Image 1 (cartoon, rainbow, N blue to C red):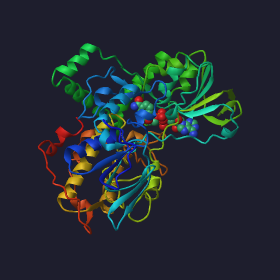
Image 2: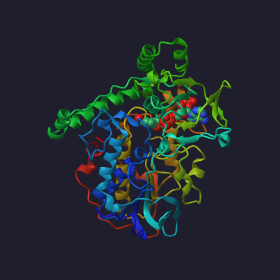
Image 3: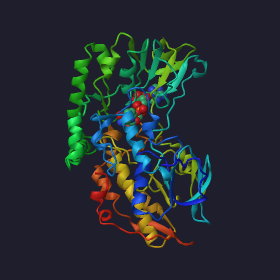
Image 4: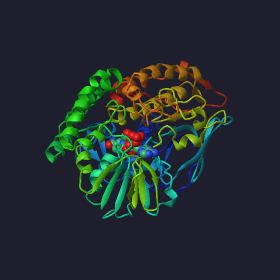
Length: 515
Ligand code: NAP
């Protein structure tokens, strides 16, 4: 496929997709399938596809969701080598899916600003490669690509090397180094076992211990892969079974927290078996309800923390020229600091760059507490779809199962709007408020809200603006239809003219969405 990235951007397209990870690819697929008549282009700030799986290339990066759920329904992958995919496998998979869309993707092209032009009824998008206008804007920036770096006092005095887990500095040879690792989240528990035997000394700065359950990972051998490839339906059946078993987690986390002790028993058993030292075990035992923060899956974290060259200490409070000071005031000599401190999903940078109908940016509209209608539409932002938006994240299953219904909804909305001859659509404030008024009580009773922890699920106002509190099938059903009554339309200028052909599959969301 010819590389079109160096070509100048067209002046105008019908649909512009921003970001080429799972979300952007799901959008490109639906648009090509359902709207071949629309001119669609995607821009991606990096030199290749992959989103979060391109960005996060730290040692040990892997997925804690089974691979059978970690592929797009239109691009099944019978070739996964492990039940839990390694980062490079997932990245390669995404690149291979993206290759089919190369003629529609401009890489190394970042959105710098986008504003709604009310008179022309289109988005004006500034990019690092020039300006482009588009009728519909599909933002698919991902939620976990923008590093959250804490401001540690004394950082300016530190003479060593510092980097974030999602911006791993591969020029640094960690052999023999005195490394400080800050954080005990999903990234940290993958990095530590991978580097502990290489570094000179590893000091883990733990602010809050994590609930850790065993990961039952295994290789998928050539015979099994051949069956998935050649025997019709088997791979799909396995996917269905894993999906059903993962859905059961919702019962624990969001419906009936009384079931959580099952997971807690498993986590405590692993801790007891793997950590014999009582005082260390106590320090590694969380005091909040399991599931409140993301439950971590690994068998390697506790053994790694007990290596002779590893120390677990309290939260980092400041840096000195050659060290890091913990919450007991002890200084640990370090020459490298790795911040595995997570991301900023409730304050995504793109929200500061997108300006809506009334001249306010998404960030100004949200004021630190993102809200949307069905996760994808925001009042005041006509003709915009925000994939992986507010309240669409999962604690139990694959985000791919949430992104494909969003792409489906985007495509269906464009179809309905163009079929009705409208040029713009916008969700009403009442519909958006009503949607969130229904969602908030559901969130209140989940373990994420009530489990006694702080996490990236809760925004600066304390609202859970990240998680979806129901089954993925509920979300899929919700995204299967477009409610005209929840929208206002503005038809000042002629609409995009396109004949929308609806295929039988399109009318069957169960068939076309996610599974
Ligand atoms: P995270 O879960 O947000 O964890 C960040 C860690 O850094 C926490 O231990 C946190 O401590 C600590 N931290 C943050 N700010 C700090 C500060 N100022 N001082 C001291 N400690 C601080 O981030 P993550 O591990 O990168 O994971 C983020 C998300 O990415 C996950 O929840 C998951 O959804 C996704 N992820 C997925 C996989 C996968 O296998 N699929 C792998 C990696 C990441 P506190 O707990 O005290 O706040």
